Picture 1 (cartoon, helix red, strand yellow):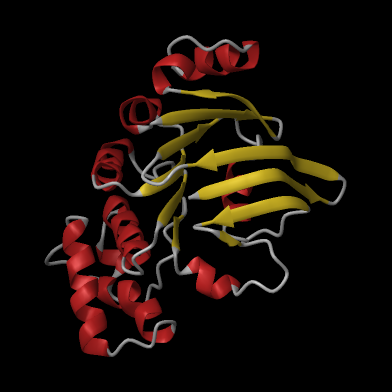
Picture 2 (cartoon, rainbow, N blue to C red):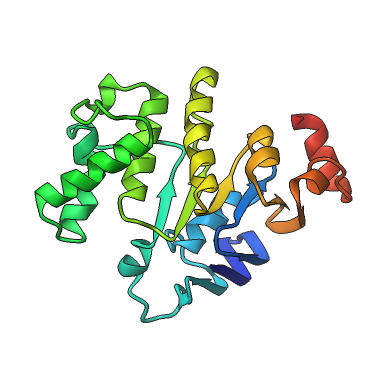
Length: 240
């Protein structure tokens, strides 16, 4: 579903990604872990071209998203992305936030858009909150609105960028529960996370990044339980 080949990304003289090769199969859940500044978020942002790769190639669902003439807006409709910050429009209620892209990008009529929006809000446990505004919702509820907003486009792939790191600890579980349910339903997911318990339980594969490269990857039991690389061992000794 996702193929990353020789991906490099520089910001000025600083090379943040230094030759990433990664393949993610359909229905696979890959959790990307590593210290801050290791390039994890930049990798996600290059996959959906929020950042322009300096070199290399990214293919999603058979489409080369790094090709010069690709319709990136069309490609992005097949990739949902959820960020650390919720990025909700404060002047729109939950349903309005979820249906905005359906009406403006897909040109769906309002009744059909709202029907699908209500369905996705219910799927993330927010039935009855359709008319609540962001400032009336908890952080966990706002993040679930953001997930519903991505899901409403019926993406083939979901990218999650540290989506629980801005939440109070007691709210983390409700968001991880929604992500766990998506994984159970077969969604292809790449998840940048510091939640090692989630990675251990849900991931098919854990990828450890450091200093812009993939240092180690494999099943959670191997990478988290008995890592072979010294850098992975050092990182996990501090976070587990």
